[in-house]
Image 1 (cartoon, helix red, strand yellow):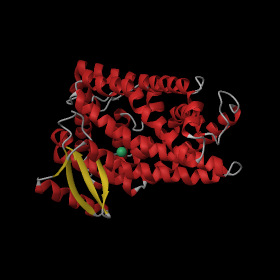
Image 2 (cartoon, helix red, strand yellow):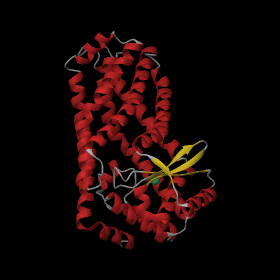
Image 3 (tube, helix red, strand yellow):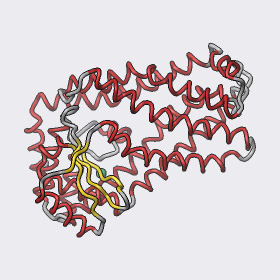
Image 4 (cartoon, protein in one colour):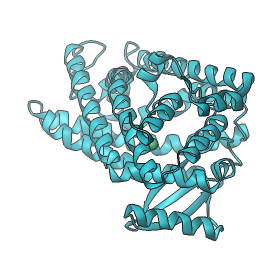
Amino acid sequence: MQSPALAQIYEALGEEGLKKARWQERMRVWSQVAQLVWTALYALLWVPTGWAAALRDALGGSGALPSLLFVLVFMLLLIPFNLPLGWYFGYRKEQVLGTNRQSLAGWLVDQFKQGLIGALLLGLFFWAVYLVFRAWPGGWWLALLAVVALLMVGLYLVQPLLIRAQFKAEPLEDEALIARLKALFERAGFPFGGVGVLRAGEKTARGNAMLSPKGGKLEVLVFDTLLDEVGPEGLEFVVAHELGHRAHKDWPWMLGLFGLLFALGIVLAHAVLVWTAGRWGLAGPGDVATLPLLYLVLAFWMTLAQVVSNAFMRAREYAADRYALELVPNLPAFESTFVALAKQNLADPEPPEWVEFWLHNHPSIARRLEAARRAVRPG
Ligand SMILES: [Zn+2]
């Protein structure tokens, strides 16, 4: 039987909203396909044309410094190359859905800022991978694990930076709500680092919230849009859910798993680089000019391998929901929060199963509502 909350979501979305939600699901799939084709195109531009080998030679070979320059040129050129896709699946899509509130110019500035941070972080990672390939041609995989671990730490640290680069934060003024969240932190046993409201409403209609480390404490960062939509009770739930992720150490586990998959992708790419040595002026794994191939193999591998990390994350989401319901035992508030969130983010409550299996790191709302009912009334 369909839960009453699910019926409310369908009502809140309406025919128009449901159409948009389903279109958004199809866009999820097309964005993956398009990204792979686009990445393949980028590699085709570099490798069979001989440009990769030519740039390597022009920069002075595969030594440490020329390699760094090569990697940076490759990653920085990727930013404008990816712009058309980013525009369609980022900006244009949000316009069609009606969730965009940003000018194209403003969006472009954000893209370049975030693209730059990503390019530098990934660039340094790829540079380290090639240094390792050259230094230990036989035993590179052990050092590789250390380099991947460093990347995962970097990704973790860069998250709050990316958020703050995109949205301005100001302190929450609602004293009652602050006291409520502080009490929630105390019940959960976490040090409360205050609440920052992100001025997201000037850029998007979507809502979101997260916890961010701040001097040994945890700060709540909440989109002003979310606060408007779900109110204090809803925010309490969202924060309780996030505390569940912290209590279960989901971030370290997730990064560990993601890092392992990433490392396996590099191992696969290494085999491809050995196999293609001698073609297109490439000299195997120690040659930085093979980066377009390594990048391509990694992109294809991670598109498949996310099935594993997404399955893991979906299981962790149920656990965080249960944790939130234990901390705040109020099922009606839990359900009305989901109604509000689904409406705000135009979420299809029951996406196609194969899309959920492949691309969703959260279970569908229908499943989460059902699991919550079972958790509260077992049997
Ligand atoms: Zn979650």
